[in-house]
Image (cartoon, rainbow, N blue to C red; front, side):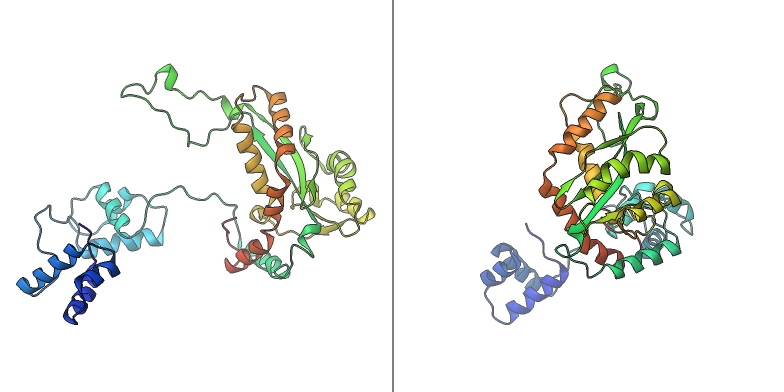
Length: 336
């Protein structure tokens, strides 16, 4: 039988007393007519529509305990249930599961936290200032001229803890149930790329440690400059050391490249970060997993070329929303 909340019962009772039909009330609350009929019979017999006392296990916590648990976890979201059991004042015999049940009743559930960059007060101020400066930029007049660039490192094998195995009891260490993984993911490859509403760059393999000299000679000169031939083109890069070095800055100035100022610790503002995630998912979905670094690089390049340009345009079209989100968050983390 469908249940009505206490407030809905009072409203339904008032409508019954006002002469409204039981069928009309049932349609309004999306319940059966028999539910309303039983409600009316109970009120006539007892003078109340409250739930009748039910047999069951007594509640292990008081209202004060519930309030203490709720407020403690609202003030520090990373506390464990066991720590709240130990911190609970007064004599009690509570289990960790009881604390979890009370938190669930308060709408608090244990979930995987978002992993975000460390943002200082200065970082937040710069992010808000940047968002306000570009708040009114439109895709048609501004963002479509921007080339968003970045480097990303892809592991040969990645284990994020989400993979599951279906096994029987006592099969934890069975050979077909063990997820074998090389140390540090077996290494990986670093690539550089750039995207725009009209196209994308080639995916450049970056070998070894990148310096300002290598960044200029191996990436900017052969790959970025041809993309920035249009006088309206704007180049975006983050504040990594090779990007902000004097050599790099002077090279971009000498070639009259307009650079978009970028706030530090702001990967959520760069749409290419989402493209890296999509590229990684496409490689992981391949029927034949890359067996070595060469295979991984080839798979990355092939999948990079097959990503629809429409997907890239959709990412860049989100820039106005990203600016509004960072301003609304007062420079803190955003859902992007």
